[in-house]
Image 1 (cartoon, rainbow, N blue to C red):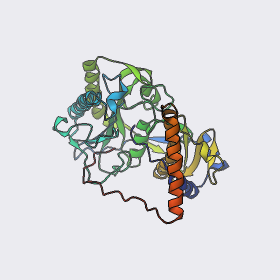
Image 2: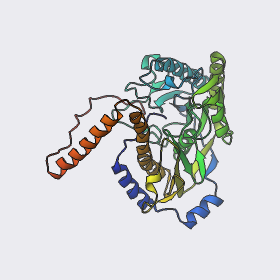
Image 3: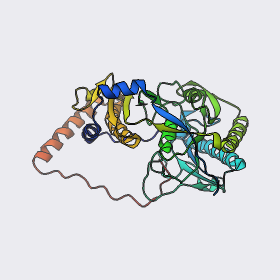
Image 4: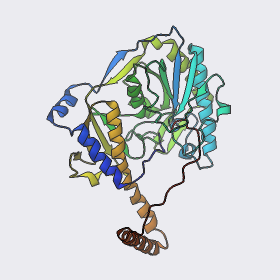
Length: 377
């Protein structure tokens, strides 16, 4: 996931207060538990293939084979169309392998969020045996599809390493975030596995760069395909494309054939959840905030389960991303008319205050968005 930065607003801070107070701040008992217990448990998958094998493929876009340019996963850049071509090839290779391994039904959901209102995979270019997940209302591809019996396994394609891993476009959820659950920093791939673990569904296949391979080294049951070597956050050395795709197809086939040996990841509850941030994000504004355990640009709270932890982390991200505006400030200060822009902003800010106090200001009503379909993020 990359393009899901929440809106910067003070309301986000108030949301945080409500959530963390409801979840209770971390105390000594929670700290002791997280240091002595495993962050999650690993259980054998209980697969019933008597009515077929249904698999969900969730794709991101930073871990594509043949990719070494960050502009390929960001809608609006000319290079994005190349990214779409690479994505189609990767996902279709995995779909082909899943069916070769015995899958009877494959659905595909967008876990990226490029900014494109249309799906990153054009429907007419998806393997015709597979079906895209489409809804009339917005949904969170990581949590809202989880339902017992909906799928027998999950595969993830074109994923990326976590914040701080040094991988190609490595991040967690969005820029500068690090999710820590029960003391362990996790990748989005692990979060997907934990999310589906709530429904006893295993994650069986993943692809991405070499740094993600290292992040997932403890998930020994998954078929992992390394498609490139990360040399920095915005550079990589891709493997030969057809070779990587052949490995993806073969790995997906083995993943289905070995489905009965798959494992399910289940979070240990209650969950001690921490959001640690690095620039351009910041949580310094929350130091001293009532009901929050803050230290070193990290905020920790206790949640009853994974869903509550995810909601709390999302709310705190809304605060952390307010710091993105500091980069905007740097851009403005470097602008030839920086003084004029600053003066215009100050005047508009004071004018808004006067208008509100005088009862002259009414917020603009946004027109309802036109009807559209949603394919994930």
